[in-house]
Length: 105
Image 1: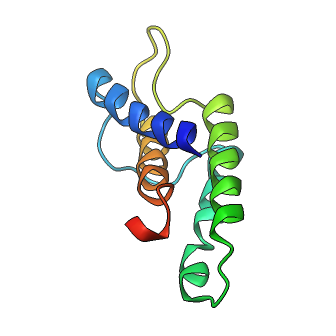
Image 2 (image 1 turned 135 degrees about the vertical axis):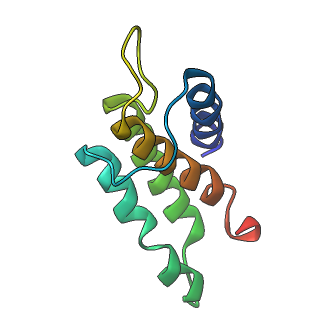
């Protein structure tokens, strides 16, 4: 979980350095959409009597690692930043916010 949080923080720094555009639409790849589905569970977990935070955060971290490996949020090489990159950076920002756990939300 800590590595996923650190990775999401790094994505935000790299995106700023590379000039990835601001907020955009939804991610165009299945891996990042899976991260969004895991994030969609958050409101229900916050209101649950037994939210199972540890297991949820592990699932979120694993989903984010998978998404980052399959479709990087920042452009590689000479690739130009695109709206797809911006959407992935936005997902990284939300993951960065959620992964420290319920005490930080």
